[in-house]
Image (cartoon, rainbow, N blue to C red):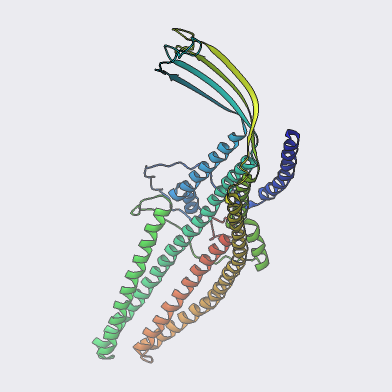
Length: 468
């Protein structure tokens, strides 16, 4: 009987281990499971404000080290790694001991021989037992592998969170630049309108223009001032959010530098998709989720098999705390034994069977979720790739529109000063120029935001988007 059980154990392990090693080697080749930064430390001290302005790469790298949410994710991985090591310890022998003190009294009117009488000073016993699992229905192996996969999954979660944080910092950095450049553009527009108001007022004072031209110029000036206030408030709000993302207080006077200078993206859609399927952490996590659920099912299936363990036990007994013989009817004894014991729950009214079915359905669910994620990854990459291409076209159109709007404004202003054009022509041309500049700034910012999203959807870390 024991030979048959040992043979079953050897065959089961030899069948399972090669398949797992193949899966692990395949997982180790996936780039998605490697965090960008390691060794974060929690600190409550406020970092000193840098004297020089931070560019996009410096802002992203600082967020990688000092954003608390990433530190929390890294601590989660450390916890699951400790759980893996704990599960590994279940394979080794277990040492246990116990000590007891018992005092018994028996009062009966029946004669007892001295050998059957209870010890006068009670009984003290100390036992020591070493157990070694031999076969647990592969429960220990499946539990360890599940813990190892969970640790690997939490490790990949760090990179997933890092990429998400990169996109968040870059988006807020680009929003700051968008509002900053828009504020500068609106300030130039306000200066143009103020100049036009001064010219119109001078013409009105000498009787060359009607009062309505002055009023219209003043209305446009007030609208430009209102828009400038909105742009400056948006810039300051983005600045506060950016400060908090990289570990500074919201009101810290941190300076940021960068320009929305167009940088061409040269990859094809096929290259983007290939990178996404190979590097995305969430895909890797989904693959691990399937394996984790499969190991959970193997743990349940262990209930079909007997559990066998070897043991060695030793017991000392006496009538004193130091296990010596003392008092009337006392005794002292020592006993040791070695053996193998097994338990097998043969029938449990379908408990293990239906638990196995439940775990198997969860495995199927994880596989469906993985396939659904693959489809969504393809859509996400293509949608963001198209957003990049759209923004590129908008940049080209907006640059041309700015050139034409500047020329139209100069012509309108010249015609007005020569008393050929109207005040409305100048204001309309100035408004068109402002709109064209805003469209160009928005197109550039949208291009870099789409590029940041595309890189994240590809699973790639690019801290600086503003340089080739």
